[in-house]
Image (cartoon, rainbow, N blue to C red; front, side):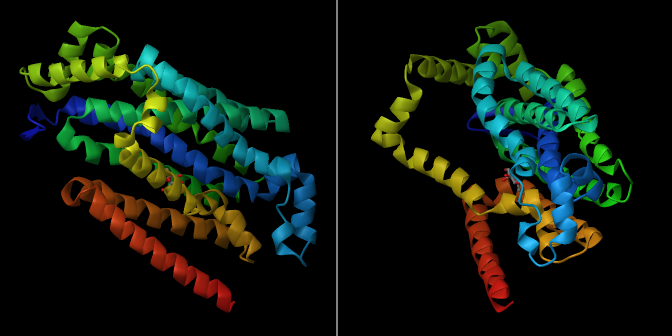
Length: 365
Ligand SMILES: OC[C@H]1O[C@](O)(CO)[C@@H](O)[C@@H]1O
């Protein structure tokens, strides 16, 4: 491992950091799998017959109106309940991260995931199905809160960007795997959808077992008053003995954070924090407003309503997922080399061009 320094703190890229970050990033695989799986499952006839017979009827009879085929609020609840639960649970997860540490919060995520997967794969009624999706959502809320924080803290500054993008990389790989799984299971009758939903068990088990092996982050230990353990963790994760400066920096940051009584109010009221607040919020919001998840959640359903056959729709979703993964791979290797800003600007230009092209194609149809 090449020794180097970042923000004046000496550190190496240790095997432990790489391993821990990869294990944690499996939370991303889980998230991605859940994003990618629901659209394909809801397009499967066996699944519709079992839980949504009225949608099945509509799908096969309503030839005159493609766009109403999947118009069913309970069916949409199957997809959205996961994300609603995730939003609510991320608040609880933020508290758990602080109180119990990042490692424990990841273990909680894995436990929620496992319960959710079992409920979903074994579903015999709509209640089990939705309850399973809610548990998966809780897992995602906990995982998405703890994993990026864990990776940011376990990695030294100079490797943080690259390792953090691994989380996003695994999200996209999860989406792609889900699309491929759906493509094959759609031809396994009548329980292919159970295999699709049960497949989420693999990343969940891996995250669960892996989270038993990983170490807690130095920041979390120091923040919770476990100074000795924190210094030890700093030494092992940074791979150097001289961690005094970084330790002092963490203590300073922790003390400053503790003094802030109303962090959210401060953030909004303090004019000097507006640029960061604005950029952070706008970036997140607009990344989602691009409409990417319409494609990620509903690609197979969308392609089917546009007239493609069942297999072709699922295959088209595989193509979309592959492009998403390959593009993220560019970011993994480019983020620390070119910097966040350049990547972001070129991504915005790419999106603008492709949305314009898409607009032109759909207008001429
Ligand atoms: O790669 C696309 C995926 O990444 C995310 O934006 C998460 O960072 C998801 O919302 C989306 O489905």
